[in-house]
Length: 93
Image 1 (tube, rainbow, N blue to C red):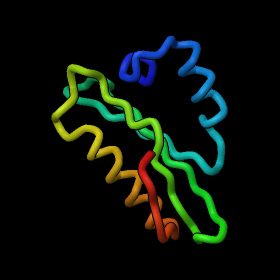
Image 2 (cartoon, rainbow, N blue to C red):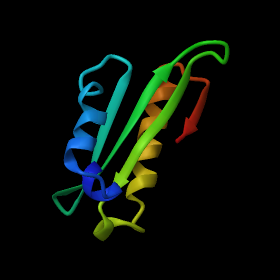
Image 3 (cartoon, one colour):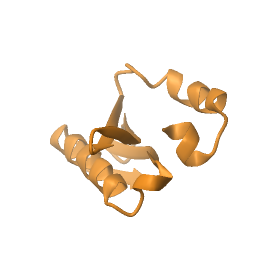
């Protein structure tokens, strides 16, 4: 999904995503539409001077599924989870 949506070589997407899967501060969601996976998005937790934060990255939706609310749904789900877990700020990259 990531490689196709961002028009990157699969190896480049694999390198970007490999360390995130299963890492404790990362949450990845996928979206399906009519039974087919069409999107992926990732949130990463961080803390520091700003307090508990959530960054949303790599929101990718296949071209044929765009303009149907898929990205918004994934982003909303990740934000809701982050705020439920104590985040007080978030940003979308």
